[in-house]
Figure (cartoon, rainbow, N blue to C red):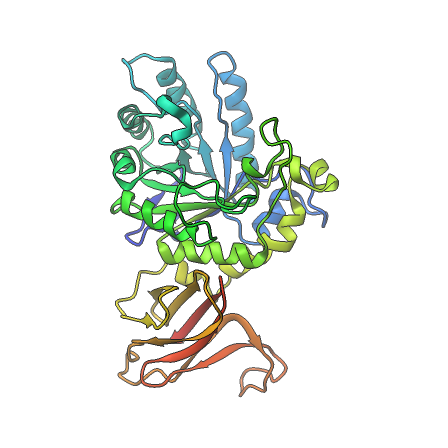
Amino acid sequence: MPSPVAIDPTGALVISGNKLFPLGLSNPPPVGKQAPNGKEGLQEVKSAGVNFIRTGRGKWTVAGIDKEISDELDLQKAAADHGLNTWLYLGEVPDLPGPQGSSNEALLNKIVNAVKTQPALAAYKAMDEPRNPFRGDNWIRPAGLVTAYQKLKSLDPNHPVVIIQAPRGTVAQLTPYRPAFDITGADIFPLAYPPVEHADLPNKDLSVVGDITRKMVQAAGPKPVWTTLQIAWTGTLPADTRPNVVPRFPSLHDERFMAYQAIVAGARGLMFFGGHLTQVMRPADAQAGWNWTFWNLVLRPLLLELTSDSVRPALVAPKSTANVEASAGDVELVTRQTSDFLYVIAVRRGGSTTQVTFTGLPKKKNGSAIAGGEVMFEYVQRPLPPPVEPDKQAFRPISVTNGGFRDWFGPHDVHVYRFAR
């Protein structure tokens, strides 16, 4: 029996005793198909840092449930074979607004009892976007989801339940869902023509990602938040209602900004949606069933950074008590603290390109002042003292004076600073 999946006080998951910042694909590459480099698709995404894949389905049926569960168990095995965790989508099943004995209750019993001991299972994805106003009067009321949550937890208390909302609605409208989940969040896909049709906020910039994440943090209360970011989405797909749609994808600069801004705003996990939408892929990718072009150009480099030994510790670390501030109002930041380093993750919402001053760095544990740090994944070539070999690359150094430093920021720039404690 796998050990229970826990939630750390920081909001990180704890699986088999290890703290994890979820980085997932919704949906992942098809099982058994190869990436362009010849690796099996799930092996390739795992090698670059993906640790979660969404499984399950949007529609579970009474007539087909045995076959549907059999297919799910095959996916669970494939994930386990590649060292991946699964986030099992329960579709419309986890809604029990009526009396006991409903078809949804019977399906929930059967699905959960079949999968709850699978070693890859890490979390359940409950109802998707229940408060989406596009549901009209059929938006899903919290009461039925709370009942379903209680039922699910009685069947399987060892795996958290996640509800992802649409990037719409107010904190007051979303807060009543809090008893129906262990983790919440929202999907937010700002890149389309025209921009940011996906959300209902006046901000039409990429920085709406942080606004939505902060809203979900408020609605979640003490519970953690995962933010789902864009590969592609339905607003970038051709349809009868959108015959002249122009597909649009994030660049690496865009995706990196969105990921780090979500983290700064409080996200304790990131999912990436739309790699499976074949309608807007290159023909070779469509044949392979997944957007490997986007993977190689954007997502793989970002994930390698996020899961590096340099950055990963900050993602599961608690917030620091350091009162670091930026001189520019459009620069957002969060400080994280490990036993060895203080991290400052800073992003610029937009605006112009200027130098920004940061103040408030604390002293080291030994009482001495911080004299300098490094900027993660920004490199310089320079001779380094032993034991570092002179021809090795080093992260860009940053000088600190009296607890402060300056650095350049352009629109949607990200800098991740690390200072030895």
